[in-house]
Each structure stands twice: as structure tokens, then as C-alpha cells.
Image (cartoon, rainbow, N blue to C red; front, side, top):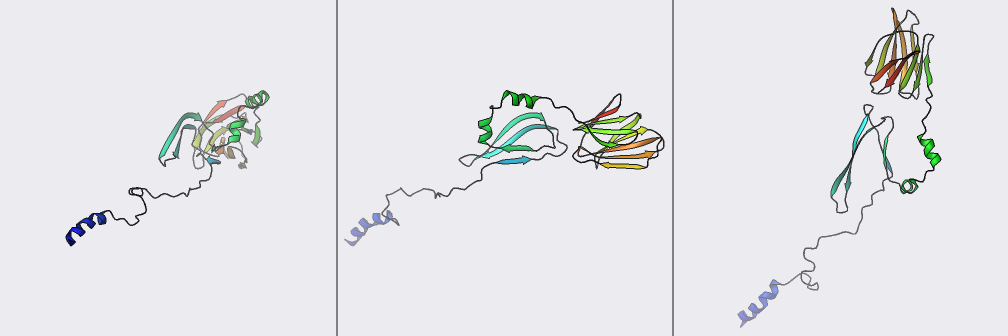
Length: 217
């Protein structure tokens, strides 16, 4: 009789649970969750600074996180010339979107109007004068250019002009210009001009009626 009673109770022990007040299978395999949401600061604006060797921006790749936590990327092909002196900004602004396209015709004309080049005298001697504007350098002189070449560390253009002179040495530092310093030193039969630049460039020279015209590339 006792064995028969135990046989009836044995199945009940198999289905016993720690908390019998929850329905079967409603709490099984449910992952632990949290209602805490990580606060991420909104994107305002970030700036990317290019090295002085940069000339062309080929593409932009952005890596972002989706709602489900997966990581994805988006790539935009560009192939556009850039000025490494200016930072590249990444920003989000509803104001910019809402005001886009609301510029007046007059404002657009002013924006697209070509700017008149204003060359600034950055250095001058009795026989040679230097005028700069952006990446252009206008050298006014009657002296013949014998040779020119490029040196690095610091990046500089070296030019030798034919003239017998004895001025010793001349050094002029220039602020707010791509041409940072002008040095002139005399040698037998010629004088040497060293044009120190603010970064890495190539250059081209054009002979003009008043001297020589340099363009940084």
C-alpha cells in the first residue's frame, strides 16, 4: 500500500518548481533586460584637419551603429580638390536644412562673383620685390633667374638671380601667408633667394614682363 502511495506522489516531485505561482513556461528562456537607456550626446560639429600633403579628397567613409546594435558603413565617392589649410566639418543642423535654398538671387550673385586679387607686398629690396596672394607669388625684378629648385625641412624654394651685389644677408618673416619667410644672401656673380613655405608644395614658374610668377601646387 505504501509503495502504491509513493508511486502516485513521484510525478508531482518531477514537476515541482521554486515558485509555483507563475504559469508553466512563462518565465523560461526570457533574457534579462534593462530599461536603462545610454545617453549619447548629439552630434554638433567635428572638424578633420588635413596634413599639408593633402590635395584631393577621394572619398568619405562613415561608420555608424544601427538600432539593433549592428555596425555598418556608408561610403561617398568624391574626388574633389581640397585646401589643407581649411578643416573639413561634419555636422548636423536642422537650421541649415530649413534655410537651405532660401538665399536671395542677389546673395547668390554676390557669392558667385569672382574676387579681385589683392596682392600684398611681403618683402622688398632695391632690385627685387615680392607680392603674394594666396598660392601665388609675383616677383618683380629685372635680374635673370639662373636656377631654381625645391628643398625640404623646412619646405622652401631656392632661386639664384644674376647680379653683382654685396648686401650681406636679408631676412623677412611674413605673417598670415603661405610664404612664411624670405631670405636673400649674396654670392659671387649672383644672389640667392630662399622662399620658405608653410607646408609641402610643388610649384611652377612663369616668366613675365616684370619678372617671374610663382604658383604653388
